[in-house]
Length: 124
Image (tube, rainbow, N blue to C red; front, side, top):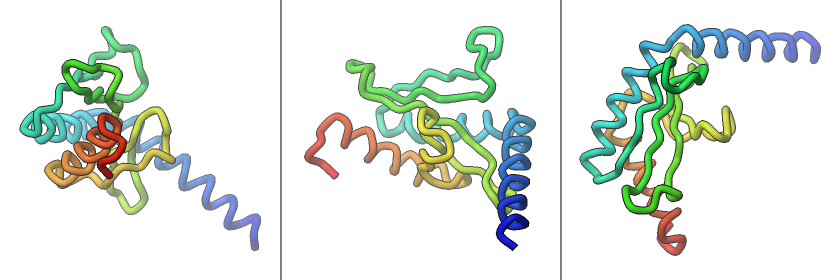
């Protein structure tokens, strides 16, 4: 029974990877919405979308403080179970889940708190 479960977990991971690879337009749309919500909060960002300039397999959004560029996070979007999408900290992969896509305003709030904590560790 355990082997069947392990096989289904591996199959689900493969399906999620495939959906993520094929969903470039969806990923870009979610990252654009997040960029707008983060701009309202005063964060700077760099869109790493163009494959000819940034040859990465997935579109990413680098969110940072304008003055201190070492304070920041690279956000990606990945497919999640149930046909949904989620924002992830790109450097941590699937373990870097931040929040679900769909409500860019609450995602921006979550990332805002995360970055403020990086800048001022006593504020969490």
